[in-house]
Image 1: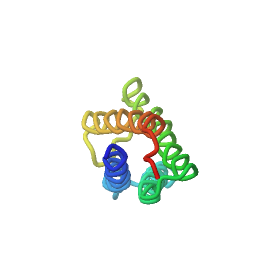
Image 2: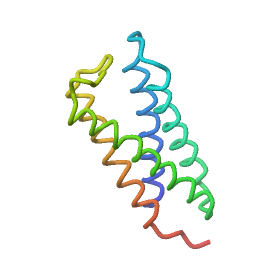
Image 3: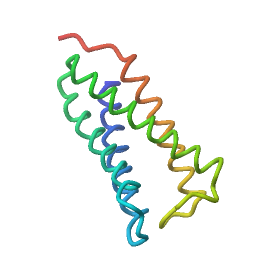
Image 4: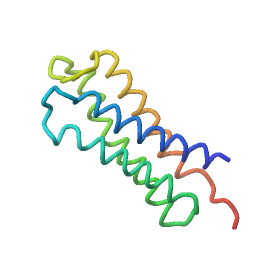
Length: 124
């Protein structure tokens, strides 16, 4: 049950990152490298959640890596907006809203990474 919830959260987070970054960047000429990272994060989270339909060692490693990669990428993005908001490009978002959303997704990614490590493998 817990792994099913974690997989659903991974899909929602992955889609949210990808769609949110598309909205943020649409029409504001942000360089490719600054929006493609969230597309990669979204693809990793969604694909790993789908693969976790069968819980194997390698799939669990991929799932955990997707959460860890997400947490690592969101760390810099969140704290850059907290400590140097004048340098942030919020695109189509209000900066405070964007900072909250990135902070929330960073927190969810950290919890997802820890949960994917700590949740026991279901018996076969």
